Image (cartoon, rainbow, N blue to C red):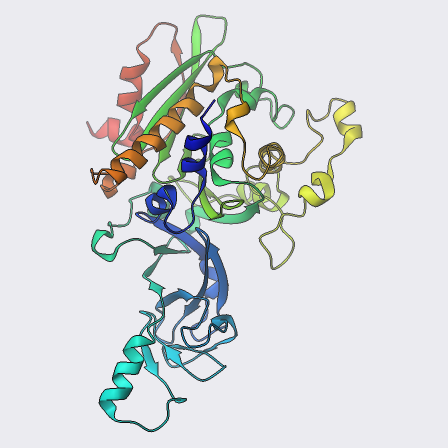
Length: 416
């Protein structure tokens, strides 16, 4: 349970909010590269952290992310002409480069060069720096002088053939969506029937959480009843990344659109080779962490407006615990059912919620550090290079030691 004040601090992400400022200190995913693949192609609307923006790829291939409202008369730049390394407002012809500079003002009447330059300086549009990594466009929305290096997330470093990312909108606040990603106990119930894996049949009873330079690293243990514990690790990396242990590793990123909507990016990847046809089938079929979206949108075909196309007959027959297709949709349905912003003053937390408690404490501490101008987590790019694993170990083995040995993967252990 949280106080109303702390719940507000953690969930509000707009400009000039504590959490909004924290998110702006990190690189954020803006769009899949395929949506702006063509230089001088159509601009794309973007809403992130409560700001309405427009993304475009300039003639030279660089990306521009600018405020949607033209600084002249506030017309939308979405209707603009993307040409000759700038986006031109079609209302009065003002043109802006990727850094937000007004580089042409044809509507300004004849005046001296000095006066024209002064006017153009005042007409600068808000713009944010962008880079492209792993077929995703990323932006930094924070103070320019504090811009960090891009994090060394393992999945962004494997070859293109080894990864695939999708995204979809969740109709709820970012925090309840992220918390759902670290709720280990729900796997045994919500996702029952999707797989016969041991994580779907035994409730975890052992939990270990370790703080890292970039967030925290968690292990959950399931007692197999034969003297063995089945351990499963996951990592939370700032500001809202999850690295998932799975047969084929996976990752999530929760990017707040605003206080009441979240863009969830989901990535399938492999270290040892290209993705297989089986991997692609999981993505296309929406039966894993991905969703099947309406063509040309980020809206899942299974969504709140149609009750996620729940199949009560399948649920009643025991074919599916929920009657909903796919882990991603099952998660969305329950997380969105909490309301647009979950009221955590009404909760009654249980021992299985230890990771949820740790998440909240982590973010509250990060907000305190930011307010006090202390160093914040996640500024060392190498701190993001973590690999998650699953393994069996004899009951009583030191989980803290095992986690320390395993968090950088088998290759790192072999190198030592």
